[in-house]
Length: 121
Image: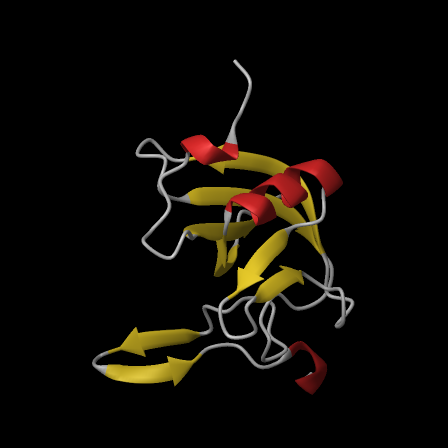
């Protein structure tokens, strides 16, 4: 059966959440949004492409930073309303310079930063 991005369940803004996971370690790196065209571009090029809600344009991960995401696997969840892209991540996935966007942990009711930016040592 051939895959058609139009069969996904997008929100009212025409977007679907996409979770990026490191293909080797399984670490969850980030969540961003895709529209149908970004889904198609990701599958066609193998470079993960998101939709930037703030800039209202395509965001090819790493195009300006060099912190690229090469697509390894593209999965659709059971409700067809969320995507999982496993990637080969080069550099930081987070715009803060951290490996993952999930660097804040709640411990005993307090927020604790558990990871420094990659260039901070």
